[in-house]
Image (cartoon, rainbow, N blue to C red; front, top):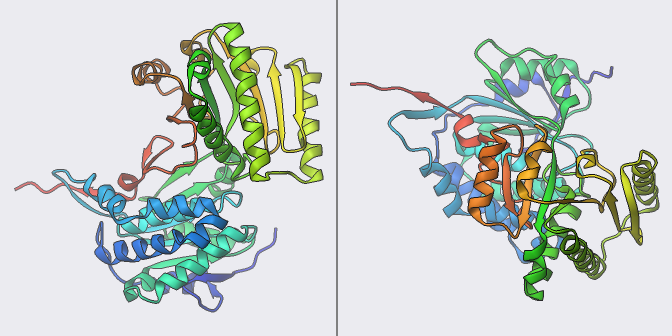
Length: 406
């Protein structure tokens, strides 16, 4: 295994450093909800919302909206209770390489809670991560010096020595990116008082009430189709919350008609926005979809160019959890929403929905009883980050409670 003990310090800008030097540099104390951090995050968020940037990278607009002052205040205010909340200490974040914005949500909430942070940014991160780093440096120019003293974003290749040193020093290790990453990180022990907060492999799906879809005004169906495309194409459908299967709920005739109309709307949105995939991805999609057919799991397969593929499953239980390629969707019919109870697995994270009342969704959540599905959000909101993610209240996880009794 390669082992390079030097880290490329990406934020604040600095010369490469060893893990020991990096840990020695982190100084300064912050409070939960520290005003200096709020001001910095708000300034950073405003820069992300600049039209020229938001148009080029829509996912950064969502991030900027998440960092608006009112949302930061709501996050802090939601922690008030009879205990005294204090920062957890040093938090070591290991985000995934395939979703460039995740590290900011994780880091920003931890910093807002007053923690010192080290974020390990993958060397394989894409151009959006570079834009984020440039914007962070831009915001740092007007920030209180405590920000630069307490926050680090670094990049390094495979290095057991660096990972071990940062793991041993942290009070909380936050690991994103799948089962393999979690297992790899757990090889490096934490201090006895520290613990892991992990986000392993997850999969997601959409559920649509067929009758509700057919009765919806055309404008509403267009809006939902646009939201579905945002949910799936922004990160090549590789985000854990991007749906891979669409379950149609209702009578067979209604489901067939609704599915056909939905696919037409999605196809038009994809064409208007110019989404496409390269030749290698097109081959990947065909291998995956024909593989389902060869295994007897698919009744039919439809390709609309290279950008969109629809697979009609032979049974709802055949819903795939694996990634089939960007813009590939499996479809299955259910007689009722309750039938999901026997299909959901623990790895299922987000259920995007259309056409169901709140009471129906709450009843399903209770029936599932924690066996799977941590989020139920409208179609179009799959990628909208929330302080509660995968069933964890992140601000609470990033703090400790001190009981004070007089």
